Image (cartoon, rainbow, N blue to C red; front, side, top):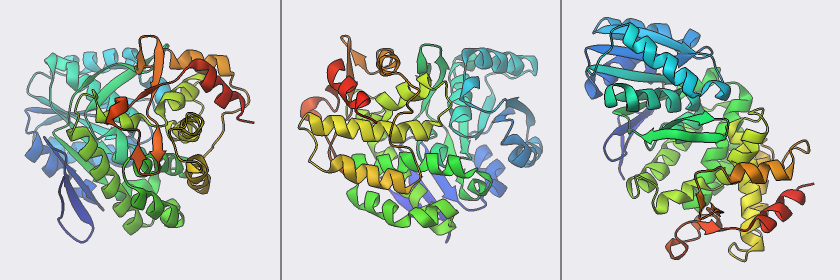
Length: 369
């Protein structure tokens, strides 16, 4: 995995079949990068109702000078990452004359990246997609790795496809318009990357929290770059999540369940923060993690202003039920990615995921108070 600098405030990470370009004010060059990576007869920009007013017009105007370009806007929020929105968007693409010579540009956070990526994966049996993430969570996690999908009533991301982007373009300056709760939520994925792969990075995040929360451009660029390096290295070693890539699910088994049961009132990163603390506690109780691992993770999560316990209004039975509908269920038992200590996950001898009985999970959930 290599990282190159293309200027004082720009980095390029090799993610295998595509590049991730990270920089300040990169959005001013989005169109040229899009055309270079995925030249097309038509471009379809998919964004949401919060991001589009800030950045869509400039991108559509720049692309329109090069080829026919249309803008398609989705209402903001996880509640709209659905098969119904997928159907509406694909119908819109057909209505405006898009064909196999179309490139889709996903401009927004993780919801837009997942949804637009799934549209690209399935439209005309697959057309290129360029990811232009505008949230911290999307920059360091959702846009990397080629996972696309939509939610169903049964759970998150249960319908989807692997569809790697042609390029990822991350302008850290767009984070200046990101609400503070979303900035904090994005840090949950950065903390996760430190836990699963790099103890030094975990410690650096802990030390840089004030700068990261204030939007300091240098700290943010460094954070995004290192997280992209970690996720890209893991993903390229296991593109379809049959092995090591499972470590990236740390915090997500219980996190997804808590998020779903909350009716998506919790942001994804908030739910993952809770999931990391609970799953680390599971690992300690099972004798997998070193004593004190949970406390170490919990301290940094709290320092980021993220929750560490399940809201009292959410029932343990409902959370357990939601885990049963997760993609990580095998032979009726839910599997968890668990740490041995910060920077090291339970290894290949365990298949990178550990079956955990419901009784133990329930004990952790009910001890949350």
